Amino acid sequence: MANETGLDDRSVRRAFERAAGRYDELGVLQKEIGSRLFARLEYIKLQPRSVLDLGAGTGYFTAELMRRYKKSQVVAADFALPMLHQAGKRRAGLFRKPGLVCADAGSLPFTDESFDLVFSNLMLQWCQPIEKYFAELRRVIRPDGLLLFSSFGPDTLQELRQAWREADDAVHVHEFQDMHDVGDALLQAGFAEPVMDMEMLTLTYRQLKDLLLDLKGVGAAYAAADRSRGLLGKQRYAAMEAAYERFRNQESRLPASYEVVYGHAWAPPVSASVLPEKTFQIKPEN
Image (tube, rainbow, N blue to C red; front, side, top):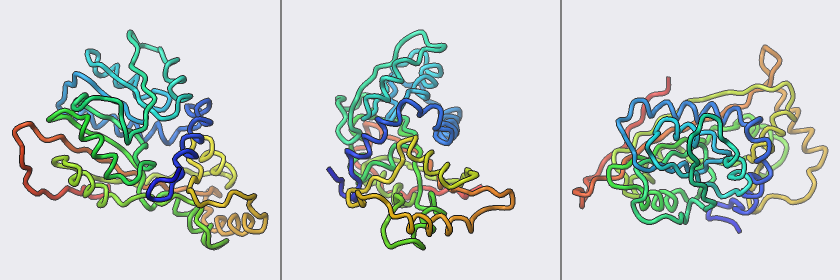
């Protein structure tokens, strides 16, 4: 089944199901970005009664949320059941178990206004159209509750995208939304005071195959509904590999760039029956 922007939802789910066993080992970037997102909670005055870790994966940040909010009910939700199996095994330093829910983020099995905080690390880039998912999140967040998330922007894997363009006319790399469009979608869904910012992070590899294995290993392989299902021709792969070699840096490493988008927004208070029009803020890149 394809969503409205051409992602094959079943393929995306299967990719993450297969990645569950080694996700903690290979998801170095995901953990780093999540840690930077989690650190933002230090500057936010919020004592939530209930917390949702959406797209929780193996539950690494579910555990961190439980340690930070010791009196809160914490629920981990993910659409890949093997990921939640891994999350259920995570016990270090925890005195209680989180709730584990296998669910699609576009149709959450929670009543209206269930959570004071929704934390979501690197999930929303797989959720299109984003307006649908923000509307569902707006439904389950209580008045004055917070949505805090990270995602990928359009310059993610720009080297790989350019190398493939030199090899053939097909699309081989996911295209992610610009943060301005994400901010607009938050307002459209009824969130208040959205703030968006971004930073560029770069991983480097000795060989291109190491990057491709990493992407596959964390479930981030290309999963468009109209992608070619046949074997990739050796000539096209060789042409792409040669094109990528031109990015090799002075340390003889191949870079892979990631545009990391961070955002947060509030559910308006009960008294705000009619919200005034607002523009979202863009922080300058450091």
